[in-house]
Image (cartoon, rainbow, N blue to C red):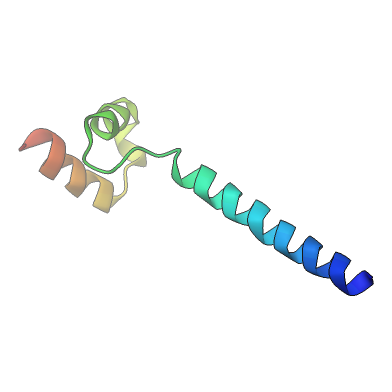
Amino acid sequence: MSYINSKVLKLGSIALASMFIIGLSGCAPEVGSEKWCKQMSEKDKGDWTANEAAEYAKNCVFN
């Protein structure tokens, strides 16, 4: 009986972790999208990474 309970607990934990990861990935807009460009323009320029600045220039300024 405890073997079955441990399997159910393990599968439940994996399912919960998967849902958490999927939920987090849906929070950030896709890089280069209109929503991402707006979010970046509202963010303090000093907090941008070099990659963010390059993507912003490529997708939001020169597009």
